[in-house]
Image (cartoon, rainbow over all chains, first blue to last red):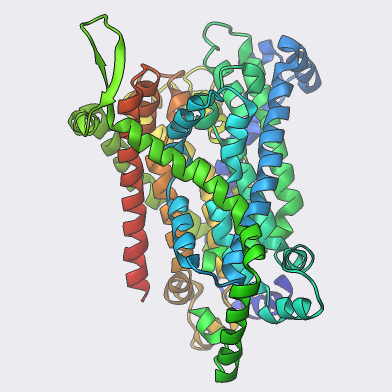
Length: 292
Length: 310
């Protein structure tokens, strides 16, 4: 898309005054400072030992102890923190993958087949988009406690594989990017409906699927209320809940503060990797969802 | 808007389509079922069923024989709802998050819109860097962001002690707006990306005439771009409203930094503390009322902006 836009920009570039140009860049610079300083601070703080943390300049490095800090964190309580990271990756990675598959199938069916009750079904799902996840946390707890399944892996995992927003996005994307003619052609070639979906449609819907995956991944990774309500066993905690618990113990156990800081830094990295490596897909997928 | 132009409405096609639909409905029932069953079952189990259970629970009430008698759950009708409507801390918390939203949402969306428009204009160099820089906070979970900012606000540990020693960001007067800053920090980039994607999808020929007339970038943004991306802005507004009413992680974290945040500070905090008392029936009633409230507000915004767009 930048290829088509570039010549236009070059053409009208010089017309803008120096004044509005520098004004724009000033806004960008101030915002960069605002958005990045806290992350920079976190990174710098994570490289300091406990003495330097309070005595040295907060926004610049003292002795570089990042590796030592990570080793200490790994040794603290038998690597509980890394258990939490692993849990989060499992909840969010596997959860988002399953959610994406089911939402895409549902959205594809809503876009490409007409069947009785289709619109009603879609409207119910849309209603689900407006019901926020936190409002469901307590009711979900009630359901899981009825069957005695609270404080299990499944009590956090299963609810997070439902993505109504994913269905909405998949439907919009399927109707605009999977041509009926192509589905028809596959049908004439003797391909079954399910096979057509997995071999033809999923390929065309990749940007939408990556978008759904990423957003569900972030939603699950950031989810806090559901595990807070469901889980008692700290071995099952996702990293957000674990760090929250540690942070609330800082007053009683002062040395834990260092673990909270280094843990916070480490907990950001998987999401940044996911976004950077998948961004060329999800940005085009997002454009579709936002326009309609 | 754009789909109308894109769809070639030849009568021939409409006829074939109709025939095709007919055969589909008869032949593909199995496939349709295969596609919709997994989601529908899970949606029923983890969206609809919990809502029904919450409604059911909210209609029960606990009765005891005497003060120390065995508690039994009996049907109480709207007893819990009567309590909800008389509970001043619930309405205080709703008013608090509404006041929060009235200030925070326009600031956040205004900033997101401004940054998206600047990124889309020819005024800015280094777009890739800025896009990533502004979006980076979205990779920070709300809980972690609150922990970080908690340190940044603290009078002793902050890198900005010159400011934090003078102004108490964690005091009762300011803590709500300190939380607003955390939420803004995390979500500006997310909203900016949604708006920016919508801007990229506008074909650039649309600007041609305006540019020939000598319209400035600001004028093009105001008169052409913003009206065209109203749906994207609506979407971000609805998600923001939902987010505001559901505020939980940030105030929950701030509770450990300051006593100014109480256990009834936001509706969700109140629900959590009520449920852990435990008074599950009252908490369920709170949940139902809050969900209805959120739903009504989002729906109103959606309808209101749609009518305006037509």
